[in-house]
Image (tube, rainbow, N blue to C red):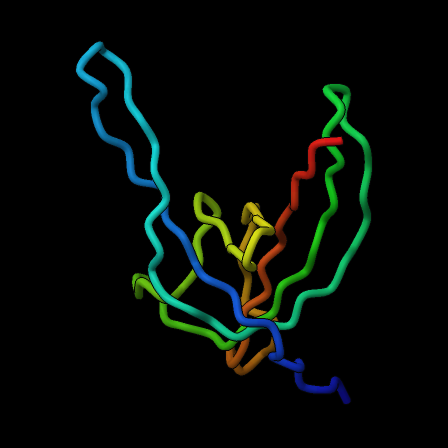
Length: 110
């Protein structure tokens, strides 16, 4: 039997907001959508060609229905004080859909 996740890390879910910069481009800012409690577990890591350390994580949290602002999406990120986790994929982690698993990457410049 699978153990329930230990939701001990407080993460802020952030959504990218784009606005015109007046010169044909845009600026991107991140807006906090709310705080979620999660279990964060490291997976594999690697060094990219441009000197970034890319560490993958499995982040498990309580499920939220599709379309709710509290349900993470792949274009969003989590903030943990000064750490940022870019969300790559989101899936239900159990048959009863009580939890979500987010696969995320933390980019750290070296």
